[in-house]
Amino acid sequence: MKIEGNYTTKQPECKYLEMEYEKGQNLVATTASLSSVFGDFSNYALFKASNAIDGTKRCEEGNTTNVAHSKPQINPWLKLNLINTSIVERVLIYNRQHCCGERLHDVQVDVVDNGRNVSCGFYPGPAAIGDRILFLCERETRGNGVTVSILSKDGQPDTLHVCEVEVYGRS
Image (tube, rainbow, N blue to C red; front, side, top):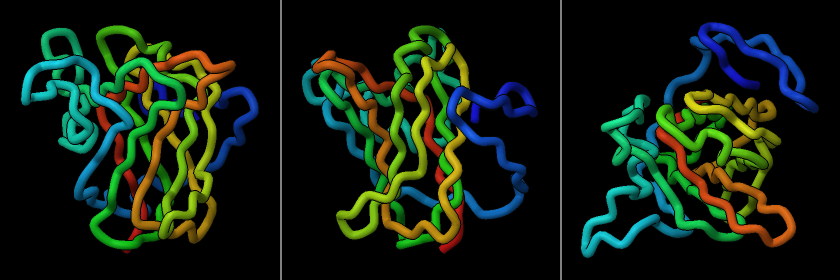
């Protein structure tokens, strides 16, 4: 689902579900890693993976260093490691607000459970600047991590960049 203001809209090939936003808690991600990090800034990467879990939901003009940003590559990914093995109910992705929103497309979200991936959903996109994309996981999906990937088409490199990723569920 795509969130617009306080409403959700159906996306092609997605199903609409009523849900309580109070249900579940924001699960704590202890670490994040990217398949690659954009830019070469000596020993400091401005676009590091941990930006996706720093609590900053506004990545707009003048505040672009809060973005987790991969290099262009085939099937880029972002992995969040949860503090505990938990039941994951939903994953909310905040897209960039200042440019390049359409780069978020063909997004696969998986819950990782001891090396096994359980699909939480697919968003065909493309997204727009500032979109929030909500993935609803199947009931009782359990894992200790979440992976957000772009499934590249025809060997075409893609860039994965997000402002924030929130994981909701219960421990």
